[in-house]
Length: 449
Image (tube, rainbow, N blue to C red; front, side):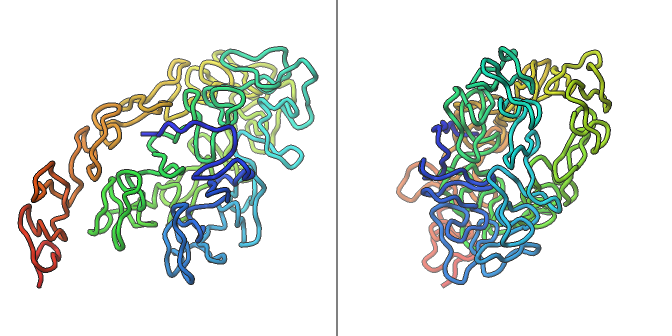
């Protein structure tokens, strides 16, 4: 379901241009201006939508007031525990590349280290190879956190950095191509992640997007919500609430965790309405770490292994246990580790998992698109029943079959032609049933004068 959007080598998105500087992790570029579509009143929910004077941008929709739990900063409704532009309060912004993580404030994302006030990947950065103090000399490359004369299996040399061209967003497909904000690198091409579609330069879930419901450009009306790719005025299903016109379960939605607009920092999941680290990881200084293998937090958050040691099973030592491989000081199992699949630094992206040292799609999904991502063809309108089998506009995909959304029925137009999905509650040509005209107004399937 991901769209094949090729990276341009310049950081741009949603109609942006190459002159714009790097945007924050939660932003896209709207005609050269970095914008967070969830709360920017000048670009609310879409680069082309501006809220009227006196309105606020609340979870991507113009509104009179903010959702519960969000704070008003100018004309924006923000979560100061996760918004990198308003981290802790309305005036504090994180540096480019940093994320906002609750009480910890601005931090580098998982897998990166703060060196000289910049977030870097010490597994591949030749200026900070393995740690902030080690720089590789001329003729050397940074290979899995160590200066070496050549790159390891599955990695390519870009400058003096060893990277996976199939998955590295900054070197996607070749050394000179970087992906735009919001895109991932999958099979060497820039695209939206699994389950997302590129609409006007922004990756969205068309199964829940208020402005792109079922397909790009299909906007729901006032009072409606997007449910399973269809606009409905009957309210959200049980256990879901409307957040910016999208029906979500705030018990497990990372973008609306516990309440609308409360985003979990990258790397955390939403469990019973609270942000938390995945199983097997612990929160330390705002970032989820694996105490069993992280050489900077080995066994407990405060224990760092020496530069000539590795972290194996929660303890620092000279070598890894049987069946493990040392990757940047961490002892991993390359048969199953999605960040080091088959070899150090080879990452599985696009919804793939690591099985037997190979990146592959999980059960009930297949690779679709160019570049490909793992797609569930039982509910993807763009790949319904198989890759490339797109449903007609206005139809949804249910159990691999294109169908009209709930509350709609396929009615043939009065002038003939293919049947169209019709809302029998409001359609004056099909009021209460196909072919039943109404000379007045159709209200809830009944003709009113």
